[in-house]
Amino acid sequence: MIVPMTPREIQLVMSWKPQAFWPDEQRVLNKLETALSNAAQPDLSRLPLQIIRGWAEESLGGSYGGGEVANPEEAVVLRKLQEALGEV
Image (spheres, rainbow, N blue to C red):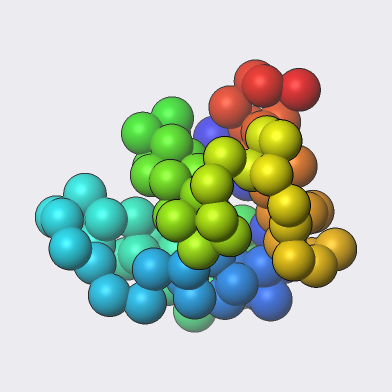
């Protein structure tokens, strides 16, 4: 699924997990880096989207569904993740 993210939003997501711990996380970072370097929107399946959501929860402090979001840019990215996962 193509997730409509700007280059800045991709960089923001990558900042949530600057170093991968698991191979799946590294694959997600590689996909994001490829999209960024090709000036394209990332093509992510459900598992990578769920991994990114986990990064958001770790980075932004708890479940973002009812938690606080630090800035409007993060809120936009989280909304796009929710839409892609069919949670909206």
